[in-house]
Image (cartoon, rainbow, N blue to C red; front, side, top):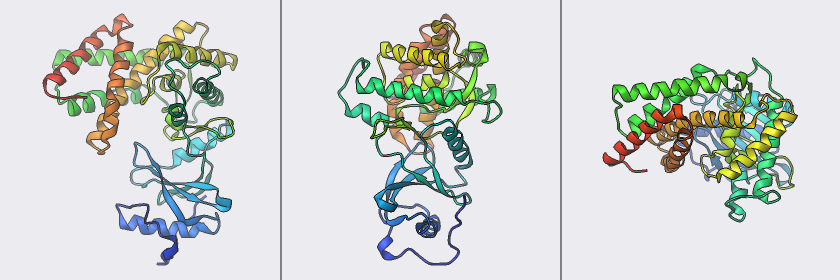
Length: 374
């Protein structure tokens, strides 16, 4: 539904000042105030309660505002020249149809990129994990372990709703564009290195192996892919119900291994491999029972997850460098050592990836000699 901003010049009353929320563009601030005023009556929104909620790695940010009975709501601020909200709305509808707990779109000004959403709470799965006792190996019945079991329940439900030709394909072209972020942004711009022709050939040969393995593994099994299915994007339920799901607007139709690789090889926290295997095998068992195409051999499935994870690790190294150098979000670069370790771990297991492992050591050694540090 669309709620156009008020066309008159009426400003928010002084009592509803949004001073706690800063704006780089005064014109966008005025447009937002008009829109908020326009929806406040219909949605029982209290503009004076507006405050920051969170931001993400894109150009979107989120604000929180109180509604009726003190219940909070979320406002998405997504500048339309930088963010397209239509995929968010489409995927939210698909997830709701699949029985997932996702934000409900209550109001949307498509032209200006303002959206009012239901609030899934303030406690992410990541925060719940960090709030609990530290466990090198979470065991069944412990809160962290149970949260991961809830996460795979959510994932299987989402994948089970998959249909072809609904979401964009996670195809060879997209895999290639994503892998290209590593040499451009991590190697070239962050590390300041230019690969020699032989090194470039080694990298491109590894990329071809990674692409083809991920496209052909498990018979090319395809499902809906969230693309960032990790504890920071899953919301804990105060009542112990199903996890909520956020940040799903980039969902595609692609390899079934992607989201479980994302969940267990997280950008911000690493797990003992015994725990990674434990949760992955539980996902595989549950997915098989649900009729999902994960194959009958867990060893084969786990290998496919590792190759898919490798593609993601290289992509994220490029993304985190880009976030720092282009977008001024330097905090992401602090987590690049985690992904270097993930790449080393995966590449060391498979003979075909030995040249990539040697190249990585050359890149890291050359970067350190040039004075770069993590």
